[in-house]
Amino acid sequence: MILDEPTSALTESEAEHLLDILRELKSKGVTCIYISHKLEEVFDIADSITVLRDGKTITSDKKENFTMNKVISLMVGRELTQRFPKVQHNAGEVILEVKDYTVYDPEIPNKKIIDNVNFYVKRGEILGIAGLMGAGRTELFSSIFGAYKGRKEGKVFLEGKELTINNPNEAIKNGIAYLSEDRKRYGLVTLMDVQENIALSNYDRISKFSVINNNAKVKYAEKYVNELKIKTPSLAQRVGNLSGGNQQKVVLGKWLMSDPKVLFLDEPTRGIDVGAKFEIYNIMNELVEMGVCVVFISSELPEILGMCDRILVIHEGKINGEFLIEEADQEKIMHCATGGN
Image (cartoon, rainbow, N blue to C red):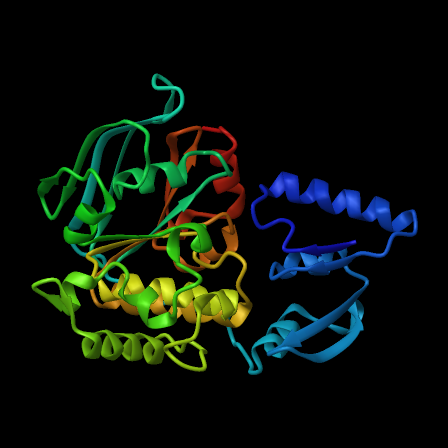
């Protein structure tokens, strides 16, 4: 069996169940090739490890001859002294505030997906959003962004001004950006090239009287390709031909071009390699230094704990816990995520 990122959309308990199934298959003589960026799972399940980089085999050996740090350095081609470039952020005033916010299921109009949620985000902080799959994290933030079809109630304030957002275009104009958890379905047009994808949400900035300034489009594309270190043969390369990490950087470049005040990042490191993850973490820190409010939604508790200043835990559509990073740990977060007080 060849399994390619089989746990990317699974909860922690579901992933562990899958690993148990693979152990059983192994005992019956089935050979499994397990492809994953989740190194904890690799070290848990593998007998031998092969490291690939840029389409080439770097090394292959028994698991006992590796450490996690060694695998990471082989994957990225350099020594990473830390997996999460945590820096001290100085949070300022409240920029985004959500009050009494409720979201309904688009198929079952009276069913609440999000139930009377209240929270805020400060300038210059990374707010982490933790919770199990199906807890309502994506529905909450895609609804605030105007991209969720279900009915919503409540109030959203940006810099003290109440907003009415009915669609993503209105959110973008007000300085709110949302990087979707499914980049290929909602973040990119994979048949279009790099420069077109970066410009997708920003044509107002590079056009006048409905005429697109192609020179400006190329200039902006070059800027974000260089700043985000996007590996592409040219700006005319189809995005669908890029690696997952570089595709994610293109989506990020699109939203950075919109000059957001608040950036929702929904599973931004899903399915990308360790080196690309580290670069995205650095970009998050740079945005915070620029005063952008970053909301970081992730199912990976180590990166939530490694990157965030404050953490909200969502369980069945409600905020069931809030922690400053100094008091948070995986056990407390999972306790809240599974319904504990």
